[in-house]
Image (cartoon, rainbow, N blue to C red; front, side, top):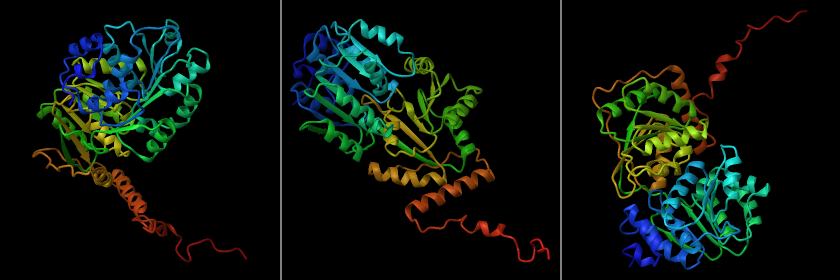
Length: 427
């Protein structure tokens, strides 16, 4: 039974860094994955976000590489987003404080000049997004012949984002003889396919059932008639609830901007917004300010759901229900981290109820429905929004039953010309 990090027989430098992080007993994923990774096994790890899986693969790598050597890198860690890559780098640097290991992080969204210069200084452990890695490899800035370990983190997200072709190209240019570690929060068919290509007789570690919500998160579901009332409810939460540090998730960049502009005009504390159209420096600065406690509310799209590692997020608010159902787990996993309690609030219109049912099926539990607070201003639903929701419900029903005709099926007959009203034929 593993009761402390001393039981892993890590070196003194790593144990000192772990102690400074304030970690006590290793998490479940760390207890099971670290010994297997240290023994050289290929590993398939299924674990929710917020369970400590980053350290589960970083610590064995730091233990194996130990000290800086020429002609690196010796370990590759791939992440699907810039935010997650930076998070892994931050954790790796903290754990490698008392070593001389050179940890580099490369990602898109910025010019490559500075990253190339850092690589030229030497690298032992390289953290990268697949696109930027291939770009710099093809230009001759990365040497792969000494790679001994390769990690794919958030594999399900990588597949969702279409990285399979890049991953296959990367597998062609790195040594065949290596240790492979694949971590994922869920196990959809594409990840199973990738594991067959990527792993060699792997040990499987599954800490919780796939797509299970974190137990320390209290989930709440509110049925709300329209967008305007969602805004009113969000304001109510910010005014009446103890939201010390909250993340508001939305589906669209335009919605994120509109919420940010609206809330910024009110007295709700410091608000920031991040999405794919924001520059990399803007996103990094917003994230750092949020981590430092200078920002009360962070409004974001799902681009950041896997890259926010902040232990004291009190609330996650799903302003929109995610259409990729696994994202619900990743969103609410931003709170309730490091064994702390958190609250996940989801707003749901009539046209989003279909997705809630599918999410509940995925996580194998029912999200508790809460009544709207007394006195909340309920806005009237505009005609155009009613039409959009009705058409969306038709699409959902047609998805379930291809023979379903829909409420709008017979509308076109209203526009047909009535008999005798056409132009007379010339004789």
